[in-house]
Amino acid sequence: MTSASPGADSKPPRRGAAARQHPPGAPPVAGDSRLAVLVRCVDALEAAAESYVTLDDVRRRCGGAALETAPSAAGSDVVQAALEEDLLLVDERRRLDGTSGEPRSVTLCRLNRRHPLVRQLLAW
Image (spheres, rainbow, N blue to C red):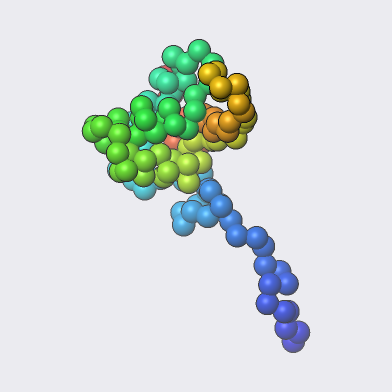
């Protein structure tokens, strides 16, 4: 019997959907209607947006909506859970600030419309 050195077959740590405890593609914990409200809110934001939606927009406008409260730390937790479950996808970009002309980072955010839960919630 040969013994492999520790880490010889190890893979890098898994993140996002791969790090979940439940099977990939499975809906988040049953009964978490906060995620459903968040998905519908982000869908409405995307539909109304003239260009793109930022992660700050989602946190500010939808984080509290998922809890039926004003945006709060708990609302950010719902957004964070959606990011971890891959319901939301993010992309880092640089854009010029309208007043100073200086480049700044912005995190764009959109629904993962291929996720089974998002498809289920937004089905007509």
